[in-house]
Length: 241
Image 1: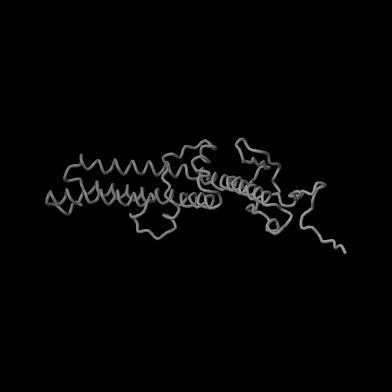
Image 2: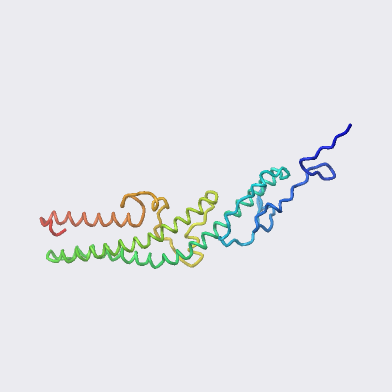
C-alpha cells in the first residue's frame, strides 16, 4: 500500500529543493541584488529613499515561511539592513538640513559674543582703578549676550544630536552618517561647531558639569570672576569685584 504525503518544499526534476520566490518579501524600493566585489558579499540596489517612508522591517511572514531557505533568509536580512541604513540617511538629511542652515547664523552670533566677552575681560588690564565699575557693567552685559547666544545655538544643537542619535540606533556601529558630512553636502563647514553627546542635553546635568556650550561658558565666566575677585582682594578693594 502506498501513501502520498505533501512535501514541505517544492523540488525540481532532479529532486533538489527549489528556491522560494522572495518577490513578496522584498522591500518596495528593492531593485536587485548581485554578488559584491568581495567574496561572500552581496550588493543591493534600491530606488531612492525620501526618509518619509516607514522604517524598513523584514516581513514577519518571511521568518515563518518554511519554503524560504536559511540562505535566502540571510539575504533578506541583509537587504533590510541596507534598506534601513539608506532610509535612515535620507531621513537624517531631510530633517537635519533645515536645522543646520538655521544653526549657522546662531553659531556665528555665538562666536562673536564669545570673542566680545574675551575682549571686554581683557580690557581690565588697561582699565584705571577709578573705572573698574564701568568696566564691570560692560562685562556683565557681555556675559548676558554670550549666555543668550549659547542658549540659542544649544536649542538647535539639542535637536541635531537627537536626530543623529536616532540614526545611530538604526544602523550598525560605525555605519552612521555624521552630521558634519550632511553639512558638507550642502556647503557648510561645521568642524568648529560644538555639539555635545545627546545624553548631555537630555540627562540632568548641573550647569558647568557637562560638555554643553552653556557648561563651558559658565565655567569660563566663573574663572573670569574668580580672577577679578582675586585681584580686588590683593588690591584691598573687595568692592571693585
